[in-house]
Length: 364
Image (cartoon, rainbow, N blue to C red; front, side, top):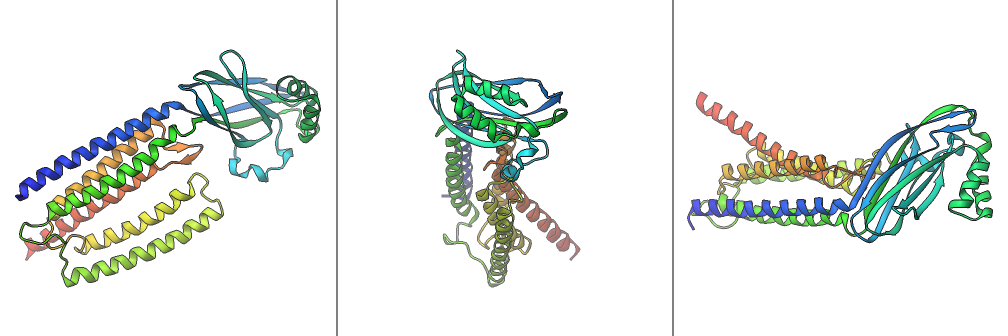
């Protein structure tokens, strides 16, 4: 097969892979229609022991019957949801009761807390739902509501004893951060692994294409590096390896201390691996040891830049659709940005190095 035919084949296959990944993104977006994730702030004012407003509500829709993960949280402004276990009950100035009802007013879920970050699994039928939040500072009013709506009389009194109503402030204002996320189990999250599997397959196939396109017709099938390049690549591997060790150690420290609550542990450790890959690629590219002697570096640089641009487009699409965060944490969609930065930085490094070499040659 002639060189230009290989280039054409590579372009066609790459376009097919891009279309396949876009289909996966569309599929993921379609599945996320079965998910509701809402954040908001609510200012609660207490005057003479009476709370205002007494309640508030939000609506959400379920598109099909099934089991749903209902994640709910509320904490005072300035408090992280992960710090609720360390909160003193006296820090709560009122009690919030959540009640989720269907369009007929039938209660599907209800609970109460001063501050909370929990989730539950409930079976919901397709339709419209309302989550109503009630606010209480008075013990007797709370007991009457609890007896009527979600527990027995004895349980209502026991629950009231748990809360510190007597010590609640009689006057004041509190800003609460609320979150309600309703996600179809095994539905809304299924797009992410499909996207990741598709991405890995795409990268593997594109790598094979790049080797086919980049090598000259007279050479063998394997990349050929000279002795100088092998030494530089060895150093690049060493620097990348130690970068991964250091970044993994730092990630372990940050994770154990919960200093980055917005990042999942798996994502944090994956970023450490990317840090090592970045150091290796940049070091080898700057020292002209990233591409083999029998590879056409121009084609490979163009392909890597296209991969970077494609990942950047996916990242922007996820930001626009609101898929970058889930339950207050970064999702795997953030890796698209990291991939884009990795490939685009490689393109910039190669372009700068080529420009420097051309200038030196012209001066000579």
